[in-house]
Length: 286
Image (cartoon, rainbow, N blue to C red; front, side, top):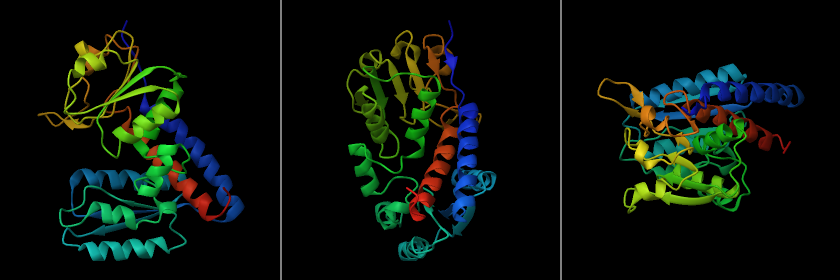
């Protein structure tokens, strides 16, 4: 029996509706519209699409949106100066610097410069530490979105074998922590893991976040597994596809997320939630 498809489009629409209602109540009480500032340096086409989507989401939510489009030649000092201004701007509650940055700018220096209370990407070391111990204000959008998708199907993570393929700071590591906080037994795999198919075949929940087109094939998945595909890759024809070979794996899995339309839409929904949380922190309502 083919897997049930978990639709990120449907779940994100539900999450956004909830955030919008909550934001309207917050703004009515405080007179504060949650504000998100997005900085993009250079002209990376994918980044420009993401920024447009974030602006649209802000508009739909009734949030204030501040876009700062800087040329590729922007120096690290100029970027840090802009972040300092936004840190002290009371109309800006969330700051997001679109990655990747040009090679001459140190990403860590930029992440560290953002006020942790405005770090809606949850990349600042202070917020990463809070995620590690399970006492957090913000979660990175993609792992948080995955957890929301699992919750939408009432999937109980307790005691399940969870395998995460990928160890990035943005997805793999925080994803592993969130599954662990929900009492999953977590294995983190990566490009140097030996006997990877053997490990993935033991997974009740398999999260693929390795960035390789169609990397996870049916022989790597056990019957009835829950498969979450975080990958975003381009085929030779320019189509967007995931890290999972959807056609074959969907015949073995019990649940699966598609690409596009799975985890992707959740990332921006969770960013909006973080922006609302940041506004509440500013207003001292939480």
